[in-house]
Length: 236
Image (tube, rainbow, N blue to C red; front, side, top):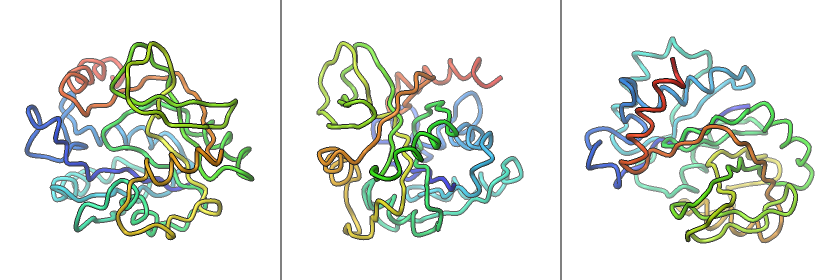
């Protein structure tokens, strides 16, 4: 299995505290956030190659990877967005760099400590009728994320952001089965959330698997500060 990290985000909401590097390179406890994502993937021998989908301030990523490549046991490649392609366009471009049937997708600003081996096994059981699998996280009293409605292991809707006392959210980790989902039918630039997730959920072609492990999205200053505290104990 290969993996894609979406590392081209502009980080607009984070610019008050991190402005000179791409969001995935925001320093957390003295190391780029990307270091923790790659170290997490390093624990899974199934992963042979990691493709970094880059764009904004990509040279910072190139330089850091060049100096730290020996830390990781997989090959690292790049898919370069010369212009913003949206989440869907970025994933489509990155998929052109791999021939793997199953591809893991991660957001470059989110750390969700899912058991990838378990997610992969569950994805295989749904392979006959699911185009992709999504790792879900249960949250309490939230309004920053849209909720997800499921029927058993099938996602039936992705809902708009609004206050929710308790519910599941999209954890930003996917496994795409390229035999069941061909992104080449989509335009060069598109939204993965709108054009793929929402539409395929209506067709009941997305599997959702809840994993109640640590989750943090550093997209806003408050959670970025929280990551800087939490990672002191998580990554000793």
